[in-house]
Length: 81
Length: 273
Image 1 (tube, each protein chain N blue to C red):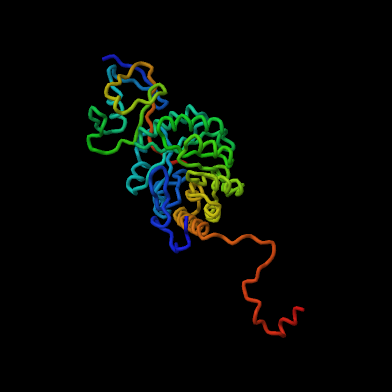
Image 2: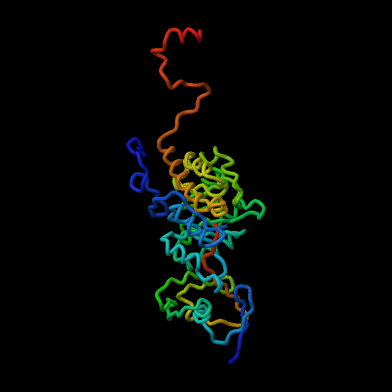
């Protein structure tokens, strides 16, 4: 399988071509996500994603194919303010 | 508000209404600066807060969802902020990510001018406010202690005006009480004193000046005993609010005896003549 290079939260990663944003995020947060990107265990995700500086809504993760050179930012709540 | 018959402040006699919700606590605690999540949780509980700010940062598997889960566990509402943003563009992107991540349209909008003062950039702040209001956000605007800018932000449709008492983390208190009072007296939306609080009397003063609530973080999280300071802030905000509603006496240039002059013994009266 061909691999693609992406930037994830300021790190370089290689992924299999054809990986969707939903599959990628599911792996990162360690939660199984259904086709609507709802956690299988019913928990709130508490994360959001932007690709190349634009927010990708959760409803679009399943159909979003990652490609060579994509820059993905995955964010969550942190102490602050 | 008729306050003559109120002898105790609670959610019924003195509800804090903001962006369509009613809160019983007028103290909003920021989560920044705590040495550990355990300390933060103790402080949050001691403060009695129902609303707390969080920053939006890169997800890391090591710290996965810790703060978010802590807030959910304690039934505290998360108010995401745009801390660290220097431009309207970055703040708008951060706000949209926060809305997705935390499933809230509330955003504490911070657009900082420079790292040295951490004071708001008025032009970028106003531009970001207009866009976020148009995008359906309830904007809590962190602003300077400038009544004119506060008015412009209100005209742009903010849910709350959050003037700085002093630079973030400085603990200098309220540097311009007159301006804070002016902002509070003119505002049609809640005014939340934000930033600069160093100790309990600063929080009480904010409420006495007419602010609707106080937001603070460092004063508690960096105190020697964070939960105890959180409790002090809770009491100070309540005391300041009660004093505001009770109506302070006017200031005078000369003394005004509180004991009656009538009935004084003649010999003593004679001593003063």
